[in-house]
Each structure stands twice: as structure tokens, then as C-alpha cells.
Image 1 (tube, rainbow, N blue to C red):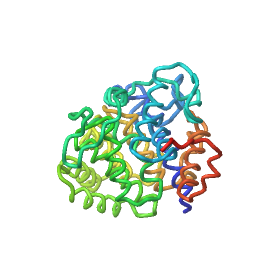
Image 2: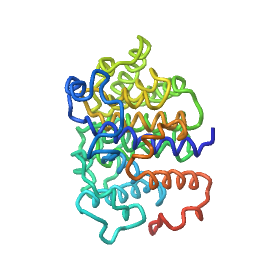
Image 3: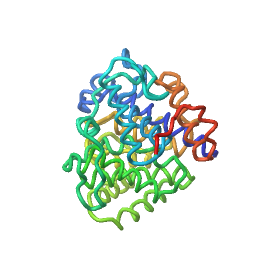
Image 4: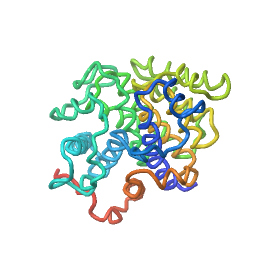
Length: 340
């Protein structure tokens, strides 16, 4: 499979999972079944929320933009500042760059508190791994994981993906588990985008994590996901044994569990959102993962037609591929580089 298919699949798949989960975020599993039937939510269409993405996909796009506009940690901070402006304004007003000019991004749909409070601060240097970061040092919310897929899609290998994602996560979340889970997710994406089978990729990522201080919570969550997946067919009850997704390591673990126990992206996405927790984030992370595994052509076509911002998502994916290939001209001026 072409690398470009996997990159497109990861970004679009994340948006599909985000949009699907947004319909049931904050609902208890019993209420989901009461509203949608015994199988829970199984289709993307849902009235006035048809295909709408949330801050999960918004921040993923701005992560990609930060990588395309210099790629340094400081460049990521500037990109997240541009995202913050989309949450403060109703429409683009003198936008900085092509992405910030997209009107659909100017929707505020329950953005995470740590993401908002962290981004508003001036740039802070990261702490070494094993120490609390300087911003929101006690926070390990899933806002670190849900935006980190692009670090694994820029062709620099799992070690570099891990390090860059973990350091960027500290821009908003300082708890070591929060930023290590982000690094683990980026490394996992890098591995499956390179064609590594999921179980092998999870094992390699666990080994990578085990070499770092304060890895226990993330390692335990991933091992729990694998153990529960090995016990039998997937179910919402089993998802909730893995976690509820509000915190970073559980969000990552639910995505891995759903990908392990299903055979196609649609089933994985459905399973990843039907639970009592942070359904849009677990759906987004699962979508990033299965999209990178199976490629864009395996995503449900009827859902792809509905998802908000589809053309922009695919353009950003193609721009990441051009970046990997060193073809700056293909970016057509969409990503002005910062002054050095």
C-alpha cells in the first residue's frame, strides 16, 4: 500500500471517529443504547451533528500545520495559538495562513480545558522525560493523544515521532503519563504507517516505553488493552474494562483495543465510541490508527462523504506526504515558514 494512502486514511479516519463519537460524548452507555438501540450508535448521520468534527480533529490539523511550518516545538506552539483563535472568533479575521482561513474550523465544540489553558500561556521550554512539564503539571488528559497522529506521519521513524510528540504534548499537559502516552501513540502510528502489523507495533512501542522513566501507567493501560482483546470478541462492556478515555493512557488503550478485536475500520470506529466516556476522542484516536493501518480506501465511503472538512483533511494529508518527499513546491505557499 502506498504511504500516501495511509496518511490520507489516518487523517480522514480520525475525523470520522471524532464525528461519530461527538454524537454520544457525555452519554452513559445505557443512554446510548436507549437512544440508538441495543447495538448502540452504528451510523455517522445524526441530525444537526451530521459529520461535525470537534477540537480533536481541529488540533490534529494544526499539529500538521505546525510540522509543515517549521516543525520545531516553538512552531507547534504557534500553530496551537492559531487554533486557539478559532475558538475565540466566529469566523476568520486576518487569518495567519491557509488553514486558519478555513471557516469550518471556527466552531467551538467542548475543547479541553487543559488544551485551552495551556495554549494561552507564553511558550515554555519542555522538561526532560521523567519530570513534570511546566504547563498543567498534574494534567494527563486525552488532549495530548488525540492531536498527535501527525508526528507519526512525517516519515522520521518511531523514535523521532515519540520524542517530538511527547515534547509537544508538554505545551499543554505536564503529567509524564500524558506526554508519554502521546509519544507512544505517535510511535505506534509511525510503525503501522510503515506497514508493521498492529500487534508487532504495539509490542515494539511497549518496549520503547519501558526504557523511559515513569512509564508504568501507559504500559499498564496498553497491556490491559491487549489482554482484554485476547479474551474474546469486542464489546462495549470490554471497552469500559479498558477505560473510559478521559485520560491519555486510557484513550490510547481503547483505540488499540478496538483496532485489535475488529477486522475493518467501520467496526473498529463503532466499537471505539460506544461507551460511557470520552467518545469523540477515543473515536478520533482509533480512526487515526485504523486509517493508517488499512488506508483511506478501506474507510466507509458513505461516512467519508458526510465528514466536515473532508477536502481540507485530504489536502493536509497530501501536504504531509509532499513534505516527507521534500517537495516544498507542492505545498503551493500554504504554509509560510517562520523567520529564523
